Length: 407
Image 1 (cartoon, helix red, strand yellow):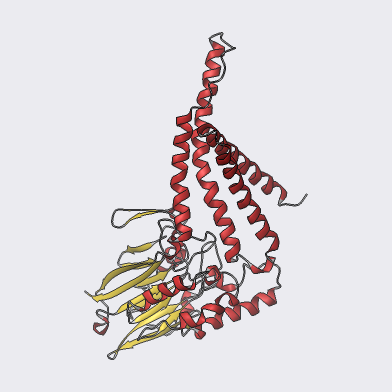
Image 2: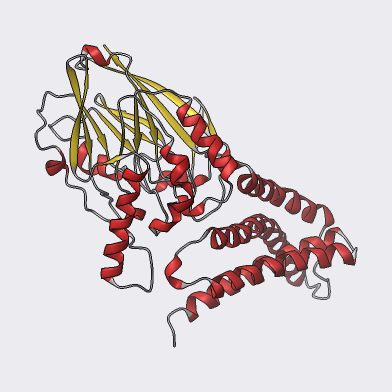
């Protein structure tokens, strides 16, 4: 028996249960057949569209924007139905308990109470909250770019770099893009920061170099007076393309690396550069991807060759688990690490200065924003683009601006 049969059966069973309870709520709230048929038709069309995309998408093309949209719409209609399931299942437990107590009271003919309309109304109202949130996330949230600014002070920062500004972007994922005007708006916002240095911390594509073809001109217009530098992310190794040989993946990897000079970025693959200003310098170090659960091609020692311990250091490393595992406790003293990768799961709740939560926090200790341990900093950029789910809910696309201060 094919290995995919069991997962398919489990998924189908879960979907059936969710759809059954959701339809029970609709039936209880309204007797209008048109409303019921519209409800069923929308669900059927979403599932049929997903099946169509799955069966018509070549296996070696990875997660196309069409595939992401199809899965995104399925998530949008399914997740809210979990809320309906929880409410109505709770009501069912009460109804069954009522029947059992009636039987114990020697009144076995007492029927199970019917569903209460207001309980179904509550379930549908609760479901409407995630539904509208996901819908907004797909339509507008994925383009809701936010500029987050930090000012970081270091005693050993060279005087010439007091007030030096860095813009960090991460996780472009160009294979997910569909709207040129919206992406142009985000690119213009990056340039409007007028930072001294522009750094990109990996995942320029989803799978293949060709995904960037339509965006080369737009991203090559990015500017920074002291240069543009980049590193690779886990998606930049062409390892997620199915149905091609190792040799073809290796060729695709080389093509992905060539994208960076095409858009004017100096790609650092376990290497470093010195940024000079007024006769003083800071070191910029770029490692290949190093992830606790992903590819580990990053070599911190090799990347730091030629740099002295007393030099001020900025490290670009795509996956923040690298900082937690190797970087923060290293005696070589990497002052500031810039990462991305997590996207903050593209879903969560953030109230600036008060509250920050996402399921991503249960996977990564440093999952979004700025962290400081013993005077060593890491910024985990929430990502410029999006992947898998074609939207963002509460965790918005980010452009980070960091000002370095002496003190």
